[in-house]
Length: 277
Ligand code: NDP
Image (cartoon, rainbow, N blue to C red):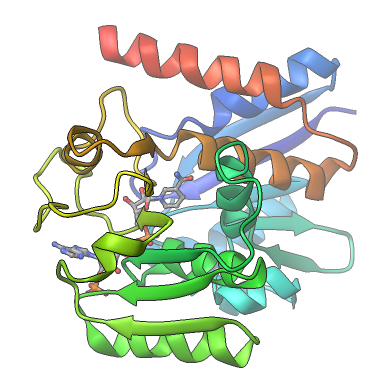
């Protein structure tokens, strides 16, 4: 019997998840469809119950619903509890289970570049939903974190949560500083750059040994990544994170191993096609 999956968010038109997941179903001969639905915040409850009533097996949840959706979930995995956000929902006959694959997806996406994360020093810019998932997953891998965000209460909350989960984190002001000289990893996890805008500060003084990741993805490097490259740093965008959070969601729903190669090829082809159009 055909299975149904979806991603819900607002806006949603740009989502690459359907292309990525459907390429995976095709590669493994799985009878399934993956759709995308724009859902406004005041319709979130109805959308989640509606998908369940229609017999969907699961869905992804994206901006701006990842935190708000918690109230419509029956059971949370440890990853969702730690992140305080859900990006993956599984519908079972008995209950709605909320999971979060963003953080581990990020960690998988950098593993080719950083073999051993234990005792690395990482700086995360931002303390929103994505930064929380990434922060929790990095801390769980033994990384020492510095969190820099504009709103100090968000920074403090994230630092507190990471420490209560046994991780190592401190907070600081959202500005350049001595941290530029000795970070092994710098993660841009704010929403700055979504519309191609410049970053509020330059990375002048950054050590060229720092791996710099911007979790935004698009056909062109963001101004943030261009700045890092011009200073000699190795860089990554967020497409790898998108792939692995999707692969982990797939595995949560369907079991087995997600076919990451065809999913990755589909993502690259789609990004290239959109660049041309
Ligand atoms: P949130 O809205 O939860 O968080 C936004 C963050 O950006 C907050 O920390 C906010 O700071 C900060 N911010 C917003 N505007 C500015 C500004 N002008 N200057 C400095 N900081 C600013 O969003 P998410 O965390 O869910 O998503 C963040 C980005 O990550 C999005 O662009 C999203 O597309 C991308 N993303 C990529 C994924 C991937 O798979 N590659 C997965 C998930 C997200 P403050 O608290 O001070 O307001």
